Image (cartoon, rainbow, N blue to C red):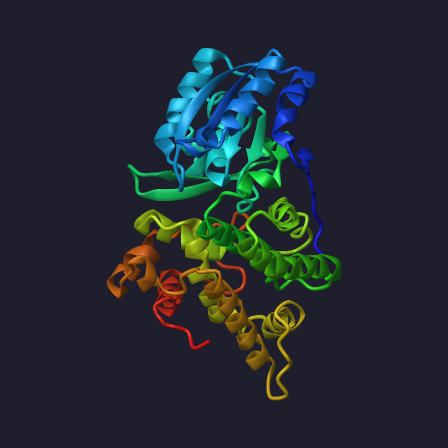
Length: 396
């Protein structure tokens, strides 16, 4: 196990009607004026915004509203929020929605006190040194943004989708009511489950040895996701299934499962190019990229891949080779993804072979500060190979 630091300052309010506690909790913490960042319609049509407003009003907390966050959140709304937040002298940014709303709130929180362009942080020209506090009301279990130190924003003008990692943007408060996900489409739930699994696998698939505790914790959460992902789709109003997905999403990306080990986030960076070019949901893009990245790197850590196959996907060990067991586990992963309605090939999202050189060229790999793959070096030619594997229809 490698030396590590672990910082998790978030206070979680979890359960039915958790969103009604936002006013009392923020009032007790001394906040008087905040910004709410949310999407275009769902928070309003569902009545969530009205409930949050009422809770804030009763606590004597005023707010300004920034509405219009889209999937793959865009920089232009961040600029608008920064300008509005400075003008109104807000004290905290509250993201209401899924990862897109929360990531936008985080970007605004580091942009308001910064004298330069907030995109400096996402283009790796600067490091955040100050931020307004962030709070969240989560409506979709997926990105883990309610507890993570990360934010991903798309700059449409530059054609870039980039992320920033800083403990300054870990939320101070997160309100989690699994009932808020009851009305979500199956596709969004499936994308969320895929994203959560990716967050775990990109930590689990490591060359670091002697990490038994976090290995077994990661495997346990993955097994729960296989079970509860299926149950959540079959029983949309099953509170317990959704509650397990909510908390799995948090544990997957607050780095509890990643401490003390080298992590590889190449597949996330490879996927960012898909969502930028094709507008596909992040989870759907990961369903295409991650299993093929796993195939590409299987020879680097075949025993670990085989362990995943056996302990998570229930594959019987092959008497002939560890690699056979490992590959059967990847197939089982793809069968699960397909069963949830996720795409498995580039063609399913409109991708073409001739797109691959551009995708590979634009990919910016950033693994814990190093611009390469940890499991296997990924230069431009190697990235093309991974994308080419994404063209193949797997035999499952």
